[in-house]
Amino acid sequence: MTEKPTTLSGREQDLQLPHEERVKLWGHRRYVGGGDPETWYGIGRRQYHFLVSRGLTHASRFLDVACGSLRLGQYLIPMLDAGNYFGLEGEEALVQAGLEHELLFTVAQAKQPRFAFNYAFDLSTCPGYDYAIAQSLFTHLTLEDIGRCFTAMRPVAAPGSQFFFTFFEGEEAHNPEGESHANRNWRYRFETLKAVAEAAGFDCTYIGDWGHERGQMMAVATPAG
Ligand SMILES: C[S@@+](CC[C@H](N)C(=O)[O-])C[C@H]1O[C@@H](n2cnc3c(N)ncnc32)[C@H](O)[C@@H]1O
Image 1 (spheres, rainbow, N blue to C red):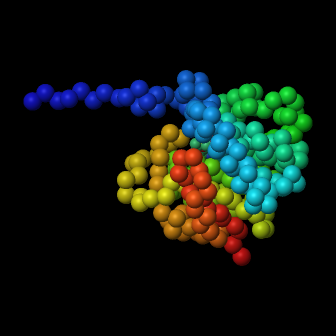
Image 2 (tube, helix red, strand yellow):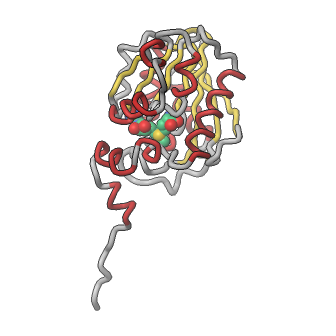
Image 3 (cartoon, rainbow, N blue to C red):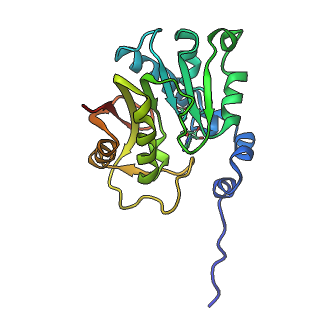
């Protein structure tokens, strides 16, 4: 019996490429899942309006966890006081593209956003946050990496701060095997994420449907005690 040749689809082939090459090939918007205006501007505006509705002001210190190509930053950086936006991102090329193409005029110079580039959740240069969001990060992470993220965030969480995070809600049985991957999807039950957040010193509350264009749910983690 002849075996069927295993062929990779174009997308699967692209996923084998190093991150930086994929950013160049796909473009900085598509890489973060914002290739069309609905998901680029829509999810950016949704995060922005959501945070303001939750009390974020120009004086808040903000941490954008996995800030990507500044889909949120394009709105938040102009609004926040200078120095109050901090972005953590694994892929530096995404942020550079965002600064170059998504922030207009002299906004970047005037508002002095700060960044850390690493995949290890090293937040040692982050001065602390009042509000934070991880939009479509936990959708790409194993539970172990989600735990690392919460653990790294706890020391920089100001008293009363709010860390919002999105996730695909569902049973975990069919999650991908292996390591976290920026372009593969993981699903979790809220109770699973809550337990991981609590182990790192957070209380965790379900928010649920916030109208996300791709069906991601929302929750919030606040420092415990
Ligand atoms: C779907 S994109 C979302 C980006 C951004 N939050 C937004 O709303 O456009 C996921 C991002 O997470 C970044 N990322 C994945 N794992 C990371 C890690 N361990 N540390 C920092 N960034 C990470 C990817 O490079 C990518 O920019």
